Image (cartoon, rainbow, N blue to C red; front, side):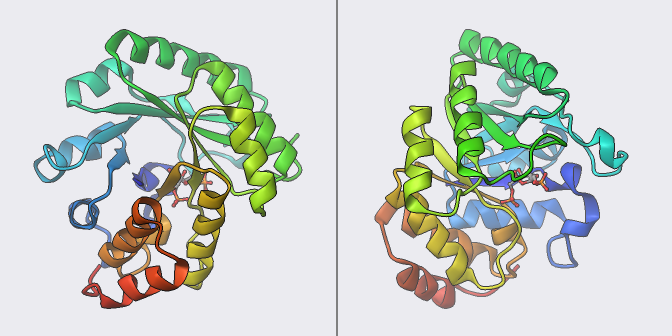
Length: 255
Ligand code: FBP
């Protein structure tokens, strides 16, 4: 269970409200929920280190793009930190995004390959945000496209893959088998109904998925600790979506 919290860079203030505007409040909730790791950019990791350090492992996100860029230039993620930065911060892993199929796929893939080389030198695992995206990609959740991107990610040397749900257990199982390294669900836009999100998580786990990398479905829920705890229950203890809803309802409601 990895808490994704790089949205301040990727999406900006539109992802936040009064309750989650201060990253310190959000990181406190992630620690309280007991996530296995938090994925953040360097600056916010430094600013919140007194909260997470020694409690929850850090995965340093090393690539980014803002949504302020013109739309046609939003298909490229640039390196914004390094494996060395991760090491200096005491991180336990690094993450980077590749938009497979994008015009700049080559640059993103070779940047990720360099990241992997840096990680290998320091004995750190790498997580790839494997997202088919760009003018050539008609459907970024097309099972064949997601599977191709996942396999390309493992061929590149990624240790863990985070990608989109493909819509069914069967198609996601094919992604998992083809990748041959752990594949995790990418949370995505907050679901209207938490049960719907829990059902996707259940399907991913049934398909052999290794877990969930989730951001908005937690920190935009208004019940971050409850959502985090419910998802932890599903991934680690195999509780059902119905039981996860009970955990969500019984946990104290805050941020
Ligand atoms: P979510 O669970 O909120 O989707 O977070 C996962 C994530 O990959 C973030 O790490 C990243 O900021 C965001 O989704 C990317 O969103 P988009 O698909 O809009 O680029």
